[in-house]
Image (cartoon, rainbow, N blue to C red; front, side, top):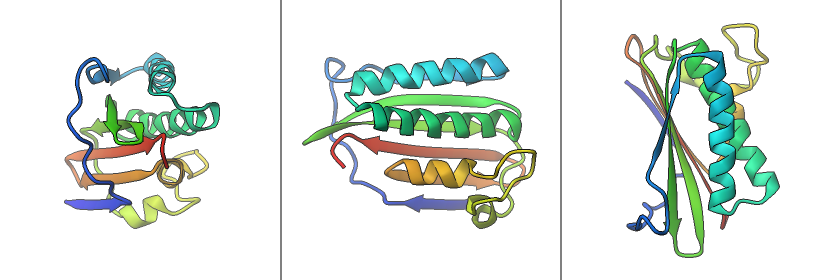
Length: 153
């Protein structure tokens, strides 16, 4: 299994349901689901208190990652979690698929790398848009990408 983690932040302290809603699960199995993901993530960024620029960053990262799971992984799921810590709030997005995995993660993170007709900015672009970035992938078993953005960074 290949795993990459970036800028890992200390674990968020315990949260209460009043502070943060329960995690939300979105299924990625159709083109329409990709639009639903964008809307759900946008609503979550507003709820978390992100400004318009950070809202756009998070929605863009989510869109890229969800599209990758749909196209390359044959579909998957997105979980949206609201986080709290002293000084700020955050959103953690976990995108998982049961696809073929990523055989060369370093290459996949390089700008311009593509296995399809895209521009090749998906994984690397999402990495730059978020504060924390982690990829867990195993050839033949799928990929999970976990990204987090905080309001106080």
